[in-house]
Amino acid sequence: MACNNEEWQVAGRRKGAARRGQHPSNPKLDSHQVSDCKLDKQKMTNAMNELRGEDVWMEWRDLLSKRLLSNASGSSDLNGDASLQHCVCYGLGNFASCVSSRYQLAMLLLLLETLQIPVGSCSVYDPVFSVSECDALKELGFTVLTENEEGKRPVYQPTLFYLMHCGKALYNNLLWRNWTPQTLQKIIIIGNRFHGIQERMLQREFERDYSFLSNVTSVCDETPLPCAPRFMDVFNDTALIQFPLEKLNKLPETMWIEPSEPLYQHCQDLEIIQRERKS
Image (cartoon, rainbow, N blue to C red; front, side, top):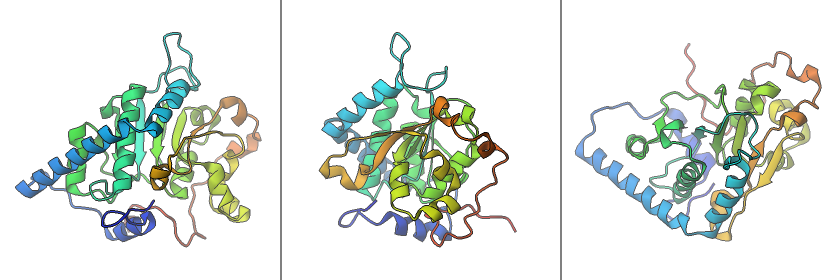
């Protein structure tokens, strides 16, 4: 993900620059922080209103409503019996200064509205969030996580994961944590195409370093999401990814036995910010 002019930056560098540490927790905000929070929230409101009139949003809305939103007759392509009421978003970046991140957050807000998921039921996290960005997100109604989960979040109910241009390890970690057919079918991802990730890597490295991604790429359902030229840096290579139980059950039973936690010993650039380990 790139940022143009004074606001746009390379996502990999952005995340790498934040490895030194996270922002301090400070419940008492001074007047400057309150002002920044209001400004950040206003920027988001403006981006949301702008995106609402774009064809790309209308196409996303129609496609995702059909696939994920149960209608009056209860029919949709959503796996499982429960409706979609939970959302997790990782890796948005600094939406106060990066236009690309801002549009991605605006799209998330529009999706939550359309899919009838309460904003308070959407948890968001990025180690690079500033204090004012965290407060703006809370003002918008989000649940802001305080711990770096590295994507290792267990799923118990149908959950939408909004992972725009996130690192491969984050996808891999999410799959590992929920590595059973019964649980994976409850995960819905809006993020990078798994097949696109595979195409950009050597197959032996893909299988060695990201085995969970590698194992499900052939059995997941990927529905590409439209991307207008104007938003190429924002929504390119994005898809709706689902894991139908009937396809997962075609994989060998031995594949599901006691999966080892990924360690990424051979990865030079992991593309995600890992949490600090206690010595």
